[in-house]
Image (cartoon, rainbow, N blue to C red; front, side):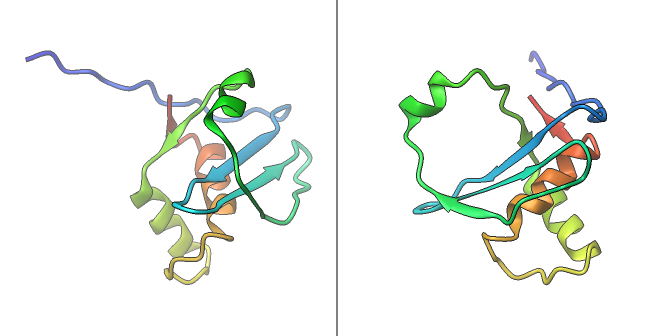
Length: 100
């Protein structure tokens, strides 16, 4: 049996704009963090697959358990709040716990 191993993301350097998206059933939430630490409030949006495929970005995937644990550690409640999830996803990416 052949085993596929995903490549883990290295740590994000100081010149990287971090964009995180929490994909939901009906509404998606996005979040941006600049290299200097400035961020914007999470925002709701709808996106079509065709529009996503036009943009030249490298998508990464995070483990939902990592997101849940980090959310608990940072003082956020463990309750499901989509609006806060993209910030936690961005933290997971910056820590290098994302896969291509």
